[in-house]
Image (cartoon, rainbow, N blue to C red; front, side, top):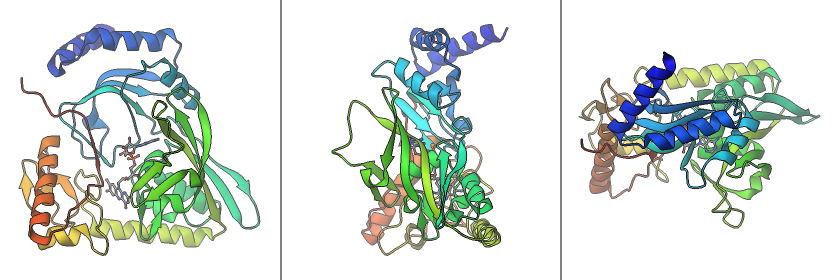
Length: 339
Ligand SMILES: Cc1cc2nc3c(=O)[nH]c(=O)nc-3n(C[C@H](O)[C@H](O)[C@H](O)COP(=O)(O)OP(=O)(O)OC[C@H]3O[C@@H](n4cnc5c(N)ncnc54)[C@H](O)[C@@H]3O)c2cc1C
């Protein structure tokens, strides 16, 4: 019954979004035949996996059982298959036309979290890419390690934090990362050092001389080197940090945090507010009246509404101040095709 229903849904949705059912079937079959242990879905609504709660369907959506399964899955994918590894989708806008290719969702699937080393000065924590940042912050505090408290306020995964160099209140992810575990397109799992990357404000790039264009790689986990601290003080710091966020951010409506990076010496929110854009909306997307660098989904926003609003903000701020706002959120997928 379920299989028949799924097949119907697959065929129906595939026609709607213009996908080729035989391709979907062949990859789904491949997963079954090769004994993959994860869960393969087809035509998965990405609105269920992004914090903005918008976006079209992903052609394939794979939930790896663990890192081995993830690596094996990468080995069976056709070489030209587009792959999108995602965490909690808290920095992601998926366009309404959806995604061709495969989304690999690692949240809670790659879920190792352990204290791998302890010495007189502190400790080394390993957190898999699928572990929520808040969990890492609490784990560090519990083990009397300090410096990871800021992660409590980032509603993403360790993998997302590594990819974005996520940060707040003066700290950034890579400040505490000693090395990372990566998995590449060929399914190899390797360890890379902090110095292998060029780290910037909300950006992480493998140094060009190390990058292999034919072997894209993703973060499987991070090793965080942290000094000794005090559990009670860390917990208090986390509490204060979360309270500050509740005060200043529109957390009651779907959003993706700060939409634009802060330009050098200024704040994107200040510039947007100065242009009179607070509360301005397109369709169901609105510039939050509480925090001008947040775009909230007031209920029925489409990805196109959100993207159009972003562009309007960029144009207006450029026109009025000469400053070019750079997007912090990542946009993927196709615009909706006309029927
Ligand atoms: C309310 C709110 C507050 C926020 N506050 C902050 C803040 O203070 N500071 C801040 O920096 N950000 C903030 N963000 C944005 C967001 O939480 C961070 O960017 C976070 O690091 C994204 O993690 P994620 O797991 O959700 O990544 P996703 O949104 O799933 O992915 C983001 C990008 O990272 C890539 N990626 C994800 N996992 C991996 C992986 N394992 N390997 C390689 N690439 C990967 C994705 O392909 C994508 O390009 C906020 C968001 C919200 C909704």
